[in-house]
Image 1: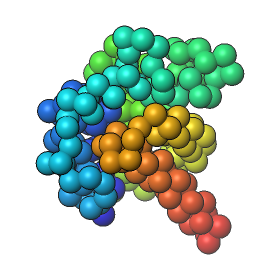
Image 2: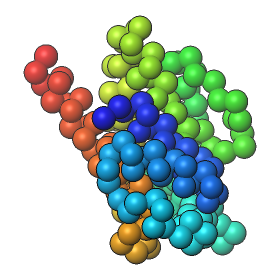
Image 3: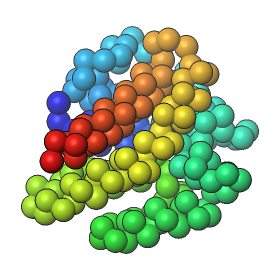
Length: 185
């Protein structure tokens, strides 16, 4: 499995949130992993409705895909958690084109940072240390709760539930692998 392609597809699923783009990114996820409902058997308008209900609104989202909602005791978005993530991005040399339109600690930006670090790690091995730290010390601390919250409001066979389950599993596996590799060093 190509981690970078998988991360890109999951990132795009959350980034766009419209039926056409969801179908395209989910198809990539399905082709990479073989997991989930075949894309042609999904009602994508229903999936888009569920996506918006869970993550966007217009009512208060059920499972906001933003780290600060889960990591800040007062759930302050654009507060200290977001500032910490922004500082991390600056440290690794990542600039966000759309900074300000979405919180920097939203799942799609954090997945993009992971993708960036894996690609950079091919030339700069220290980038993989930053990747491992970001997974273990940040993403692993909130993605499971976020995914669980969302999955509790999805029916089986929903592409949203499939992607949430895959995301939580991926972050958990990456965390275990990085901890194991450190123990072996």
